[in-house]
Length: 270
Ligand SMILES: [Ca+2]
Ligand SMILES: [Ca+2]
Image 1 (spheres, rainbow, N blue to C red):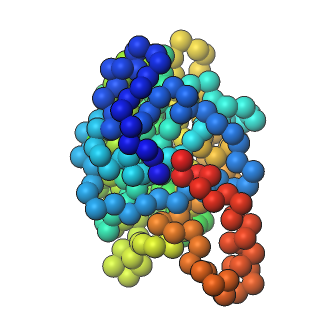
Image 2: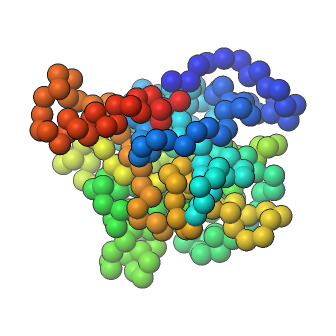
């Protein structure tokens, strides 16, 4: 969990960041995980206001996903990103802080592929833990959205899927912040399959960065291939509690799985 501390920032420009989070330049970056990327996200009582500003107290309780890796390479991304996640009964919430020297974007219509020429953050989610079903939520620095779900009923590419979700962005002196509210009911039959303690989904968190450099720089929380369509690059999104096998019971496979990830305790949550 994040400590709630006053902002003590060594770089002057950071002083303008009115974040409830204890965000400072040294927070960006970090070591590559030894195993699969996982994050255990806490349940919260008070939802954030989705306005792009991370001043909501609830973000200090959220789990952080970092660092981000350059797509197609085994090196940290040039401009780093932190995403924070938490949930309540009805929604998954995602906050973003993106270091970015030059913001590039313009308003475009929903599902306009021009969004790939803009600065964007993206979430890919599969409650079924099957990457081929992953739903994509993309939000540009100008607040444009692209969302898709694989399936013939959603058109070629799946972009005709238009769920109800919220995403807002706020420009910062050092880049931008963003917030998303992703309703469970848009992702699955939440009454039949309630999301809660011990639920595990697969997830990718990625970012497209345009700027004075050539082309798009793609980066990802999970080490990933050259583009965000990499179906193997999923991490595990764990709701509230990683291991429900408190007494070591259960099936052999589950025990081994729990043991294997035990070494990562806390690694994805700070
Ligand atoms: Ca907010
Ligand atoms: Ca869509």
